Amino acid sequence: GAVVSQHPSWVICKSGTSVKIECRSLDFQATTMFWYRQFPKQSLMLMATSNEGSKATYEQGVEKDKFLINHASLTLSTLTVTSAHPEDSSFYICSAAALEGKNIQYFGAGTRLSVL
Amino acid sequence: RKEVEQDPGPFNVPEGATVAFNCTYSNSASQSFFWYRQDCRKEPKLLMSVYSSGNEDGRFTAQLNRASQYISLLIRDSKLSDSATYLCVVKHEFYFGSGTKLNVKP
Image (tube, rainbow over all chains, first blue to last red; front, side, top):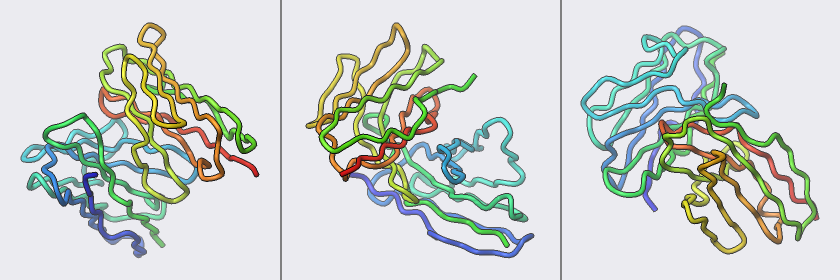
């Protein structure tokens, strides 16, 4: 199956710092990438939909100035959590949908963010 | 109202049992449906797509009912290794259900 690489897998940072998470599709081109957040024992919540070369579409309640998304190429999207606070601690997962195919999403392994 | 709603869990079943999960969706324009499996602290992995005519993959059967707007997943002869959280996904904008936790006991 298609491979999506997400980096870093785990990050611990101090409150107030910014954290960048990368999501790469390794063996296919992804016209659309998605960013999710998952709190313990809860489902994935879609944060934003990222299309290559255009602005991301954010879900209601997600602050676009807080969670900066850049989708510069068909294989790379980044999520930057700016001025992170302890309440931003969560599991962030990206996924990518192939240009061609069956509307199937392929997920990165996730990034566990812990803000102290 | 949530876009996608799932049966609450956990479902605790003995090995060998048959278990079924349902998932209802609110947007009748939804086009694609999937079941994902998520192990603890890992990313979701695609289990199977759900086709209009229903589809089967080994011990797993998925069905779609457009009229009632729900999808289902049936697992036969449950194995210990089936213990996980099962998430339904409805693509209008890739909304996930909240997940159903399955615990298969020896």
